[in-house]
Image (spheres, rainbow, N blue to C red):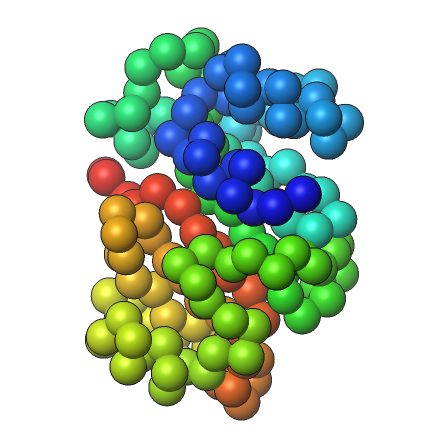
Length: 152
């Protein structure tokens, strides 16, 4: 399944009929509730992870459904994480698996946030938050997180 099917649903409530239909297609009956000490809950598949965040973090989008959580981001592991690896050819924003940190910083500019010890950069591009975690040598992408930009 392509990440694009989920990307079209970013910002939708966990009770949205289209979100529920895609989850059911993947064998998930419902999104786990967000624990009191957390801001999000995850649904893991063998090729990606979906993050559902508390609606209070996105006040401009908290309408419809039961308001329990919104699909806030899609995590695509490209380097065979313990729980899976995204095999799809399509990547957000036409990224390539072999894009280096240097190449992405040239393309997107200085990151809004980054961590050199953990090898990741983050930008807001075309209205979406893009976090890229690189391999240890910063020469390829290890994980892409694509989702809603923070509102709160």
